[in-house]
Length: 199
Image 1 (tube, rainbow, N blue to C red):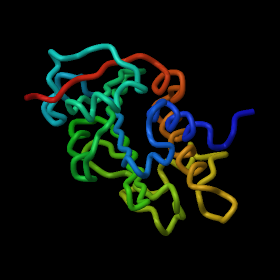
Image 2 (image 1 turned 120 degrees about the horizontal axis):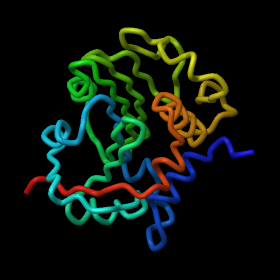
Image 3 (image 1 turned 90 degrees about the horizontal axis):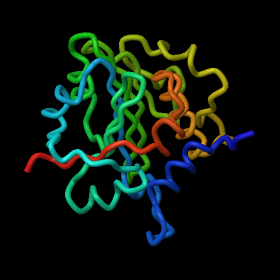
Image 4 (image 1 turned 30 degrees about the horizontal axis):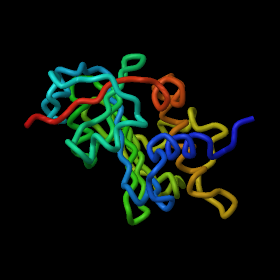
């Protein structure tokens, strides 16, 4: 049986390879990612400032050095979804990506221990919540309970017995359920691409 923090721990061990400060974490780095369905890379190149001519095979474990060096983003395509790391952006940016019937997911963590999970569809924010406190009264959007049917068995920090890492693992598992993919084998451990920004 997998640990309840498995996806969080896998992401940390993948991004922070040997030789980095042992105190580094997703919070210290400031982690952000987006997944978009219904758009191809040509459509996403402009809002993400991607130079598609620089596309090179890349594992997620290799992206940190490249992102620091030249601003590269890790770009993955699975099951009709395109995942991008890092992918900073507020709710308005996420909504703008979904105009015309698209869907988008965002997970963002910052150095102040704020975390945000966003799901948008067709230009509207459907639900947004903090994975560390996703109580019903803390959710917002057009349909705050829209993803409840996919959250069975997931544990977020609504009590003292759930740690931050389990809440983030639950958010990552929810992304896997929405995209109908295995977040570990299809995304985190698989070879995809890195793309440099337009210079």
